[in-house]
Amino acid sequence: MFSKQSSAVLSNTLSVRAATPRGGREHVYELNGSRLRDVYVDGQWVTVSVTDPAAPRVAA
Image 1 (cartoon, rainbow, N blue to C red):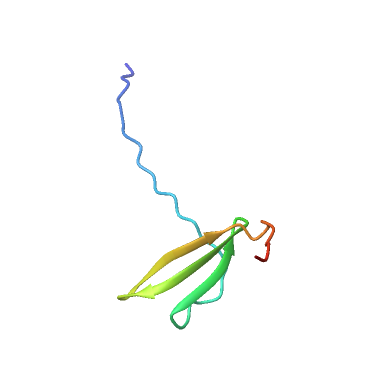
Image 2 (cartoon, helix red, strand yellow; image 1 turned 90 degrees about the horizontal axis):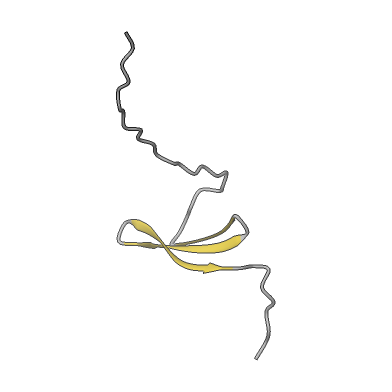
């Protein structure tokens, strides 16, 4: 009567965020509480720095 069939489930997770368009050679923004810095290299955006903006800054 009824037969069970195994099936594969495929999914993609896409993160969408409201942000200003990237311009120039460097783009700094906050995402989920972290400050990210992207740099435009050879036609692609590369994240080069991720910092915690809440971390205390101590001058040396």
